[in-house]
Length: 264
Image 1 (tube, one colour):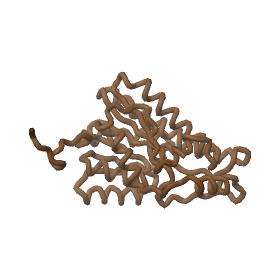
Image 2: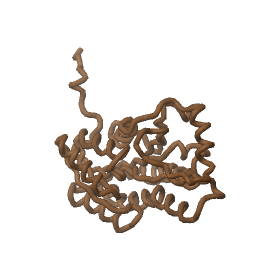
Image 3: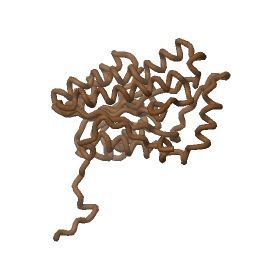
Image 4: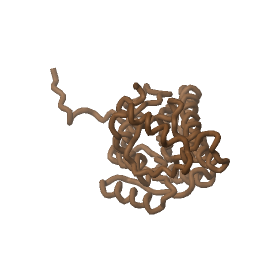
């Protein structure tokens, strides 16, 4: 019998040399995800509205010996989406993995309090932008006969939620999009999955409206059922797993990464 040591195990991720786009990669979960992909040998396009943060992320990846470039702009705009996908294809020779991570919070407004502007902006960034990016990426993945798309959904996409109506609706839309993609394109070698993070320490600030119903409601629910706060790197580890060949038979899954919060 041959003894196998942990350091001798083959790389099951299959990510070395792959072309990866990570949105919202200037900070938080997106940045941790981009770094993990680079450490696995992937070439990473960092996409974000924050030009300085994206440049810092590329510099950090380069410092580890990884390969990355940044494309900045509002990902809810078609022209920016087209530039992100074209840059990945032209620079890296294709597009193997798309991580639709970028998102914004709403003002935690109940439906009756939600202004048109809040609704439209949250839906545009959290649901329409991932749709636009995935639609732009699909022709390249289909031509290659393979591809993996991972979305950052939310616990708000698994339950009614006590946060804002706009955010909750957008994240439910994300989970539906994931499942539709998985069924529609599985025969063409495309997989689609999502993580549903529980409360995670990312530094994101919630600009709740002064009279919003969400904060007092969710405060009581979280206090009674939450475990501990997760880290951005813990979310990133799950995202990279779902994108990798180690999850080759995982398709259409929405994976809670929440210390059991969704099980309560």
